Amino acid sequence: MPELPEVETVVCGLRPLLVGQRLDRVIVRRPDLRWPLPVDLGQRLTGATVTAITRRAKYGLMETDRGDTLVFHLGMSGKFHPLPGEPGTHDHVVFEAGAVRLAYNDPRRFGSMDLAPTDTLFDHPLLARLGPEPLETVFCGPWLAAMAKGRNTAVKTLLLDQHVVAGIGNIYACEALFAAGINPARKVGHIAPARLGLLANAVKVVLADAIRAGGSTLRDHAQVSGELGYFQHSFRVYGREGGACTGCGGTVQRRVQSGRSTFHCPRCQR
DNA sequence: ATGCACTCCTGAACGC
DNA sequence: TGCGTTCAGGAGTGCA
Image 1 (cartoon, rainbow, N blue to C red):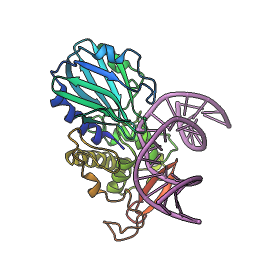
Image 2: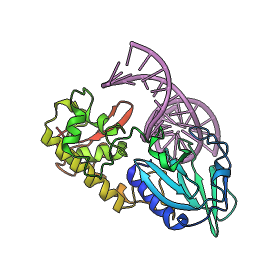
Image 3: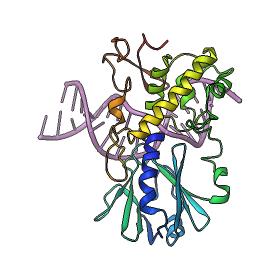
């Protein structure tokens, strides 16, 4: 389940393979991902040279010399992998550039791709209203406090709101709340600003550590090289229901919060 | 404006 | 062994 660290890992893997390369051929084999791909996506990318590959929130951005940028989201199960032979069932888009042949593979098809003009890229509806990057300095305790003001929602829900801060998903929300010692169900409007400062800092530390580990591989995530991330071995609460809390030895609990599993230690997180 | 349920999809894990 | 059920969840949509 790609969140910010996983997308960062994928983008870093794509960069050395594609930046500076001319895309000889881009073949759309299955256009019905989360949204229908633009009908001319393959045609518009074919012949273009990739000039940069970056990331915004959980989106990858592949810029070309034709004034277009490919915006892609990995959804739940999207990955890029080298394609030595024939494409398989879930290899929906194939990129060929010289000796490089890559497939975008996405069994669940929650991912998406679109093309946007580079000069107005951040006006794209998927990107325009995103909150700040969690690793940038704008995202901090005072920012969280401003976002929390007057809100009656659970603190975990606020962390998952991409308009508040962009790129955090279920796993890292759980881990950051544990690191900050805050109960995920606590109403965000009632948390002292100082504690929100601890939380903002915890988000940064958890994400930076996860990027360093190549992300987390649970079921789906893999780097472009096929290597697996290993941050899942560092989880303190996520997926550890019934296990001993690494902080106090108590029991990690799971509860469902707005349809998602939330893991926390009731003793360490208040 | 805010908060919530619902929806998309498939493979893995689980229960009988 | 095999079938049916449940779960995982990012994020847009639509409703109260």
